[in-house]
Length: 201
Image 1 (cartoon, rainbow, N blue to C red):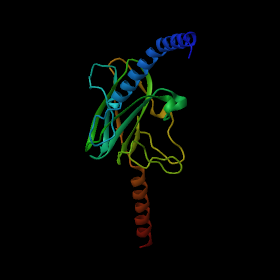
Image 2 (image 1 turned 60 degrees about the horizontal axis):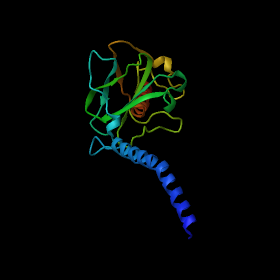
Image 3 (image 1 turned 45 degrees about the vertical axis):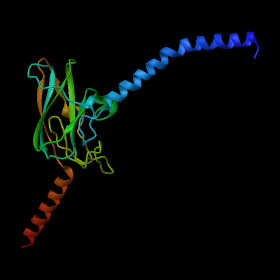
Image 4 (image 1 turned 120 degrees about the vertical axis):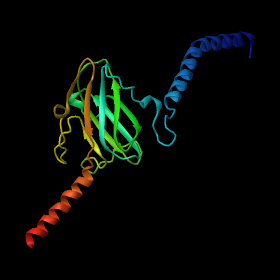
């Protein structure tokens, strides 16, 4: 390699180094931040720190969920939506939190300064796989609820308007009554059998 070519090569290297160095640093920090966000907040369940709810405050602009119908297993997931056209889809979701499920009922809070109309969904992820089990026609197979607790039918899922509520100054308290549609269907079938047998007597 002659001297002129070597000097040109070194100059190009220095210029590229100056350009790429900040980018490499920012990538390194981005990876570090992402790793930090993926730190689990619970040792036995796949729940991460960025999914934590807020501390409940009766004076804050927050949705305070009272969730009923739980058992102490798996994960309780709550989701907040503000887009009627994308209700229950990722596009319309503004926040999701996850916590270990407890027996009976739990109070979970989400703070937001964006006041307005929202709808919420919650489900009990019993096996803790971070997914809501559904059947072939997308009906939940794990305990599930929507704000305002509208009746969930297999062929006609509630719309945003049926679950909508207003978040104003000071927040709002809502109750989600988790329903196991699978068990509900079995119970209804058993009741029909008993009724049929009684009518034959």
